[in-house]
Amino acid sequence: MELCRLTIHEAHELLMQGEITSVELTSAVFDRIEEVEDRVGAYITLVKDRAMTDAADAVEMIRHGNGGPLTGIPLAIKDVLCTEGIRTTCGSKILENFTPGYSSSIVKRLKGAHAVIIGKTNMDEFAMGSSTEHSAFMPTRNPWDLSRIPGGSSGGSAAAVAADECIGAIGTDTGGSIRQPACHCGVVGMKPTYGLVSRFGLVAFASSLDQIGPITKDVTDCAMLMNAICGYDPNDSTSVPREVPDYTKALEPGLESLVIGIPKEYFAEGLDEDVAQAVYAAIKVIEDLGATRKPVSLSHTEYAVAVYYLIAPAEASSNLARYDGVRYGFRDKGADALIQMYRDTRSKGFGPEVQRRIIIGTYALSAGYYDAYYGKASQVRTLIMQDFNQVFETCDVLLAPVAPTPAFKLGEKLDDPLAMYLSDIFTLPSSLAGIAGVSVPCGLSKDGLPIGLQVLSKPFDEEKLLKVAYNFEQATNFHTQRPNL
Image 1: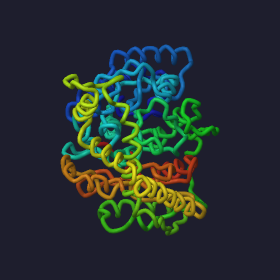
Image 2: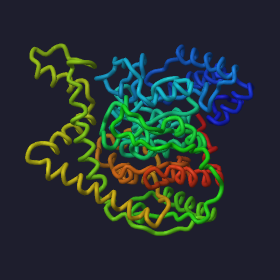
Image 3: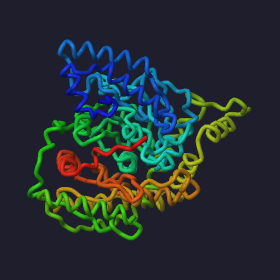
Image 4: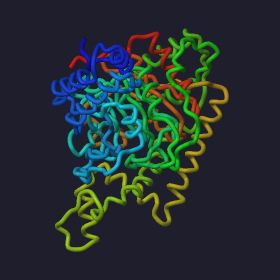
């Protein structure tokens, strides 16, 4: 038995039965990292000594009967979440040597559950990207085909899970950055409803869009991590004070009386044939499990890309203004004057994609253009939200593709930002609306690349979303397929 290949729930059961220890499990994960990491590039920072100490502590806890669902489980954290005593780079040169003095609320929750944090995963710089090629340190490669992208911006987390370089991982999703890499890497990735998971200690990209969620090997693991990370946090003003259920109890068989909406705008021209066939086949499976299919329309979907790439860069230009070389992070020391130091620090510290979005966002917020760009985009965002609200009056969930194509080649879209942006066309609308979504593996392309089914639910209806994903997963074997590294 290769311990690194275990799911969270499989590992938990073996740990509780005393058949394995957390030290053995964590050692197996680090052995796997040593074996494949030079080819995948999933991690920016590894903390083996700290992880092995935490694993040893978990052994003692379990021995004394104090183990919980995540006790002793090796997890990876996207490098956009602050970790006390462990550097947090956001994939950027400007924070290359930054070590926070505190941990994010989510990291604290995981540590409180006695999970073992093994390292920080690679990402597009400040979460701005769809391929994890915009990291200042290296690109991450897709474990299914090392010549292809893993998706982004949580590509490091998704690749680490797919390559068995961790047992589970945490990512963030601003416009699809959990679901799209999960889709391309053949794993499960969930974006919870905005406000369900605390953003305290998350380095901000676009504050009205950023959300934290799990990336796992199956839906059961996803529910287990959701139990750990969800809940009200007074440190986050956008955190919603509501009771959090036990999401694992939603994983029950049967989808009778469920109505699944199929939005026509997500099956339009430009959808890859392999993706369309896999998603339609997945819809048929869910129908066969008892659900009723209903065609629906989300009429403002075509505006989502334009709206997102005004709102998100505008918020980024505001959030990233704090990186000025004065207080923390990289500073260019060759400047003779303050303004020059600001300019040189940002020019050398930020990569080209981040600079592009700052420029777009600053322009959209500038005097004389705010109403025409940011203001108008915010109004259309409301229309997109209303589309979803109306559809969910007649449907329980929506089913759609996650990405229009399977994973593309490294470098294929680097010189064409618009083509890169369009790869998120099916995840951006739900991010703008703040609703929940999950990607679950539903097939392979002719080239053997994973394809994901996207399930969307109304706000705070994650239980229904997980139930649909779980039933589909149990009726198929796509989640058991692993890349051959």
